Length: 261
Length: 64
Image 1 (cartoon, chains in turn green, yellow):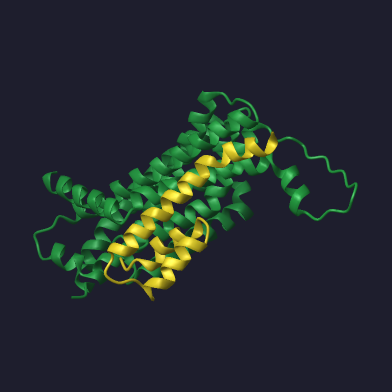
Image 2 (tube, rainbow over the protein chains, first blue to last red):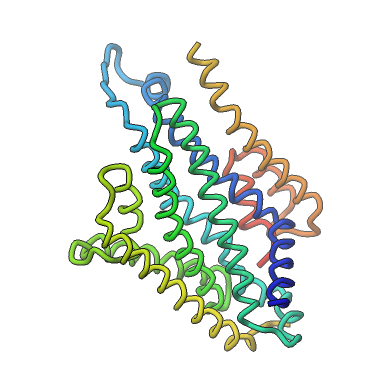
């Protein structure tokens, strides 16, 4: 436990010094703000840059505030995930390459503490970013479109948090598995995109899958997801994260020898 | 009226953007060497909106 504390402190300092603690939340907040604002000003924007013929009249349906929140989540699913993958692709692979790992591995290191400290720090920053972004987006949506039930928003955020945790875990395991950061990013993006594709094509046959978390998150704004399905999905996701963590610890200890000096 | 409202709404966005730029520039000055020439990253950070500083943090810093 003590070693975990020391390593967590090291992770904290590292994330502070390479500014990840600042720029990742900044990106999510920007995404959260721009979505409602650009939605609100869409008619004016089209008017000034759209180069439409004189007299064109376009009717835009004003989106519901809930739809705007779901749209923010859509942005996170594209750009947000990309940012998370790029930010954490090198957590372990990059450390092996830069030589930091050599200093660490030369000591009697508990790989459990090592991997978990990295996972903990990455998860904290990712969740912080997502929640700050949702809150910023919620505030703007409230100003421009109308209010959303706060409980719905919290349920929505919690459901999405499970998915973000899973993504962070996948990236870290890929980083432990692959020889360099670029490959780790490619593998984790590949896994995320392919599983989304498979779920999109065949997902109608099973209601329980971590890929459905985004759909369930959005469903809170309507009648709410089927509770049994939702809890099974959440449980499966937690189990999957736990399995991946065990796998990650095992891989990072097995591949410790691949460190370069 | 609409214009000033838009400006007020976008003020936080501008501030975050400026903050990102300043953080990236401070880091660029302090760091001994980057991926590619330093002046190029300086230009990218200042000229390319939002994406510039992020690109620098992800690609330009040699943390990997």
